[in-house]
Length: 370
Image 1 (cartoon, helix red, strand yellow):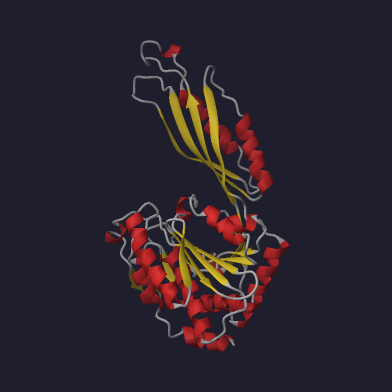
Image 2: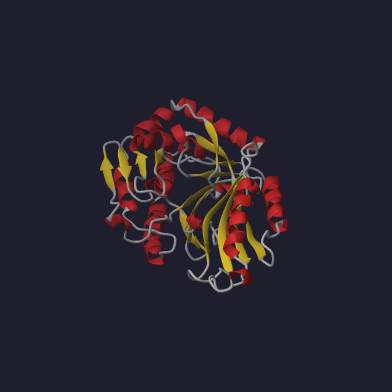
C-alpha cells in the first residue's frame, strides 16, 4: 500500500507549486495579500472535492465527508514577512532546497496536506472519518481571532494533526511549551536631571531591578524561560524618566508552572521608593503536554513511518503552535507533520525538497488509518 503512494507522489511537482504559493506575500497584517492567497487555497480545496467556507473573516475551512468524529487538520497561511520582502528574499531553488519567505513556516505544510488528500482521492483510499482542514490567517500574531474557531472545531474532533514544520531530523512534536506574554508598566516621577535629580524617581532604575529579577525566574530544571524582549522608557536626556515599559516572554511546560509564574508576577513589588509597577497579560497559548493519548498517536505514526522507511522520533519544543490549543482541550494532537527545513522567519528560510514525498505519504497514511 505504501509503495503505491510513493509511486504516485514521485510525479507530483511539489517545488513548482510551493514556489508559486511562496510568491504570494501573506504577512499577518496585510489583508490584501492574505485575501489573494486565500483565493488560491479556496480553489485548491475545491478542486479536491471539499466544501469550503470562511470561519470568521479570513480563516478557511475545507471539509470532506465521512462517518464519526472528524480528523482536524491545522495550518496557517500567514507569514511574518512584510510586503516587499520578495524583492530582497526571492523564491529560488538551490539544488535540493527551495528558499523563500514562508516555504517552511508553513506553506510547505499546507501543500503536504493538500497533496495527501489528492492522492488518497485519486487512489480511492480516503479513510472513514471526515476531514476538516482549517487554514488560519493570524497564527503568527498568536491566533487572536482564530483561537475560538480552532477550539470549537477541536471539541467536535477525534484527533488534531498539525502541519507545522518537522523538528530536527524530521522529528514529530509531541509536546510544546505554553507561551506567556506579559507587559510591565512602571510609573516613577519626573525631575530635572541636573537641577533637582533627587526629587525624581527613576522608572528606568526600577526597570533595571525588575529585569534582573525576571531573569532570575528562569528554571532550567522545570523548563521555564523568562525573557525581557523589548524595553523602553524616558523622554529626553535631561529628565529623570517617569515611565518605563517592558515586554516579557514566558515559556512553561505545564499549566501549573504557568500559574506559579503568574502568581509571582502578581505579587511583585517595586524596589525604588515611591515607584509603582504593574504586570498585565498572561498565557497566550497553554502548554501542549505529552499525554498517554498523544504518546499513542505518535506510536501509530511511528509504525506507519517504518513502513515508509522513516525512522521517526519525537521531540518537545519551546515554540508554540495552534496544536497547543487542541491539546489543552484533551484532544490527541500530533504536531510537526510538515516538511523538513530550516531558517523559519529568517532570510535563509528553506525546505528540503526530498522530504516532501515521504512526509506526504506519512500524512496520507495517517488520514487513511486513523
